Length: 285
Image (cartoon, rainbow, N blue to C red; front, side, top):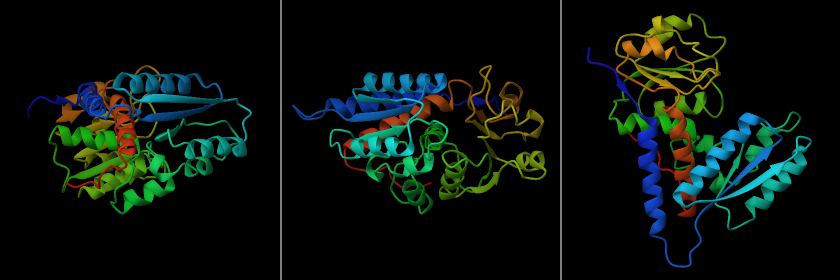
């Protein structure tokens, strides 16, 4: 078997961002650039870091950012009012509500209050429904970033058996749908799945999306599998035991530097699409 190939999310995300910056340089004179609004509720340090990274990435490609910061005690009604203000603001092209919000807020109701044409983070029920029907929409950024990474490296998806470990509504579930839309045979696993190691052992493509450090063990991986690790845990480790498992793989994402940069690149790309009045195209193999 040939040596495993590292799926370089940093390099591919830089390529996507360069394309966005070049596209924005073509806009007509006097035309304002796109604007991404980020909403941060409370003072979660990790969320602060993520929002700061996204704001810096916006500025680097020529997208304006608008920050809305709300106190920990914010209610669902108050957050909905802020979202509706942004929905009604024609200068705002994308809205990102940073997860998680404060305890006591109905997060799903707040996600679903975002207009579909401004849901550049792909978190609404509307967007997921369109994805499941393989229609144009804005897709959840992390799974879409992984799909773009596979496609960039010319990795075959059709006919392959993919095992997705984790079923969150903005990561595991949409990743399973995307892979299905691209003609993979998909097994979606979760905490109640029986004999998980045996299922993972069958996978041509393994997606770690469970949020537990190195949960997917190297001895679960079959020779030549493609490893996509969407986890990022304390100690700079993902959800797959990549340090050992990569040697058995054909392709793998490092942690960090694999999936994370692609997530931000997709957010910027879909903000550009919103500015241009279009959605991400349906997935096709």
